Length: 257
Ligand SMILES: Nc1ncnc2c1ncn2[C@@H]1O[C@H](COP(=O)(O)OP(=O)(O)OP(=O)(O)O)[C@@H](O)[C@H]1O
Ligand SMILES: [Mg+2]
Image (cartoon, rainbow, N blue to C red; front, side):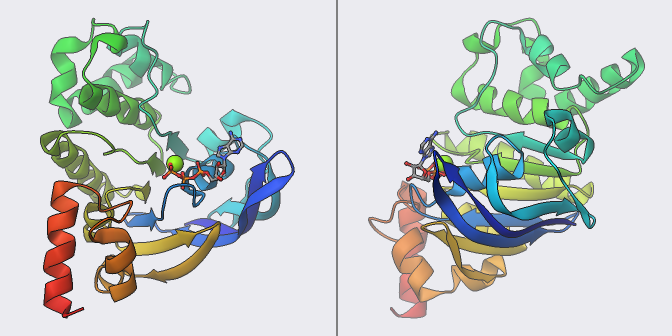
C-alpha cells in the first residue's frame, strides 16, 4: 500500500499542504478532487520527491521513502505523470518511451514493455518515429502516461490526465485506468473532471486549501450534496464541462437539492 501521512510541503518556506493523509491500495483507484490552487499538483510533487517535504511521510508497504534520489522513488514502484502532458517534443515517440524505461535491463524486456504500451494505446503504434511535438494533445497525454508505465510501476500518480482533451480521448484514458487497476496497479488520480474521476474511484478525497476535508468511496462523494454543489455542478471549477454540468444538474435533481 502507498501511504501518505501528515504530509506538509510547499514552496519557498510557505506550506501549501498542511498535513495530508491518504492511502492507495494496489488494484484500486483513489481520486483527489479539489479546486484550482487547492494543492493537488503539489501533493503529487511532494509524493514523488520533486519538492521538499517539511513534515510527514510517504511510504510503500510500510517502508518510508527517504527521497534521496529520483531512482529511489522509481525503485519503490512509483511513477508520476505530471500535469500538462510533458513529453520531449524533439524526441520521437519511441525515444520518449525508451526514456521511461531506463531502469529496464534487457532489450527483450524493453521490447515487451513497448509492445504492451502500444496495445494499451494503439494510436501510438503508427507514430513511433514521429516527433512527440507533432502529436495531438490527446496523443501526447497517452504518450506521457505510457512513458510513466514503461518502468512497470506499482503505483501511478496521474495529474489531471483528461484536462482539455476531447471526450473520445478521455474515454481511452479512463479505459486504460480501469485496465491498469485490473493489473494490480494502484492509481492516484488528480482530476478536474470530478464526475469521471469519482465514478471510477474506489476511494476519493476532497482537498481544500491543502487539507483533506472529506473522504469516502467515490460514490459517497458523488452523492454528497456539498460536493455536487461546489465541484460537480454549474459554475464549479471542476465540473466545468458540458458533460460535467449536465451530470451535476441531473444529480442535483435526483438528490432534490
Ligand atoms: N512552483 C511554485 N512556486 C510557488 N508556488 C506555487 C508553485 N506551484 C504552485 N504554487 C502555489 O501552490 C498552491 C497550490 O498549487 P497547486 O498547483 O498544487 O494546485 P492545484 O490544486 O494543482 O491547482 P490546479 O487545479 O490549478 O492544477 C497555489 O497557491 C499555487 O499558487
Ligand atoms: Mg494542478
